[in-house]
Amino acid sequence: MPAERDLEIATTIEIAMPESNSQKRQDLVAWLLTLAAAALGGLFFIKNKSPLNKGLYVGKMLATALSPFVALLGIRHAVRLRSRQAARGVGASDWPSLVAGGTSGILAFIYVWRVATQHAGFEQAFGPDWRDKIPPAQATRTRRARRMWVLPRYLARVPRPLWARDVVYWTLSNSVSGEERPLLCDVWQPPESITPSGLALIYCHGGGWHGLDKDFGTRVIFRYLAAQGHLVMDVAYRLWPETDLYGMVGDVKRAIVWLKANAGEYGINPERIVVSGGSAGGHLALLAAYTPYLPTLTPDDLRSADASVRAVVSFYGAVD
Image (cartoon, rainbow, N blue to C red; front, side):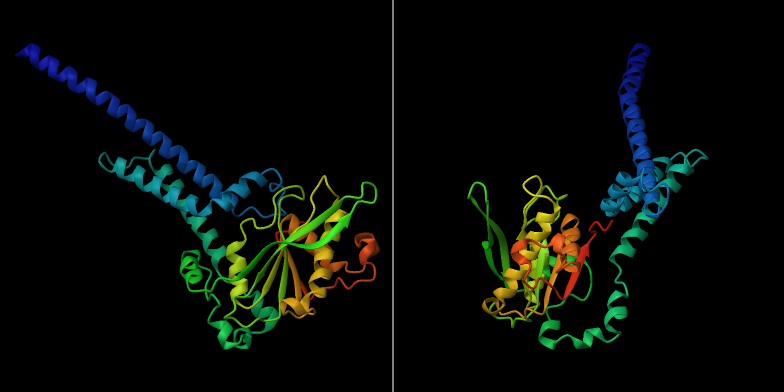
């Protein structure tokens, strides 16, 4: 009997030890993840003009992009650590993990809330009654809140736009080789059941001036704009090293001139053309919009053309 009892105790200890070590490893991972979430949460509030900003740029970029997950991660691991420690009581060494997890979750939640909250920009630019100026038929197709989880339901009730792909909007000729280089775009038009607004938006994709292409992560917003009656021209301008910055701006201006020349065919008002873009595309949009007649940024074949636009919208484009 004593031998059997000793064997039973030894077996129990042998089985219990791996579980205890596994639990400790899980607690350690939870603690490290909580600290990482807290560190990322603290980066949200470092201003762009701060001396620390340049060295923490990559961390800030990750923190902002992952902010919803950071919020959930911090709270989840704080709760998990608390539940693990509830049986033995919370000691002085346990409180830092709980505080770090809760703080990281709160900081990330505050950031997400501030980003998702509508700002007063429209009121400042167009007055407090700007919503009343939207035609009733168009207002029914306008999203009232910036909630991503309602977007699929919204798109389900919006008619599909007319989408023409790889439309040639300009053809460049190489004076040395004689080869022709077509410039392509996609044209998104309002569905036949929706009255055109007459407004057109020319969009320039991002990619650091040397990568990506048109139709990259923009279909949702283009469908939304087409549902408002607007036309969208998604431009595939030339990239580095095929051309330089001057050539890229020239391609954007060629898109403006082409769309104005074909305004009647597409049912738009040539005086209501907006140029837009994201990142590198936002930079090109700004240059094209503010220099319609500047010789150094205007190709020779456009010197006598009207490349002016009504407005420009740049999404985090480079400005210096």
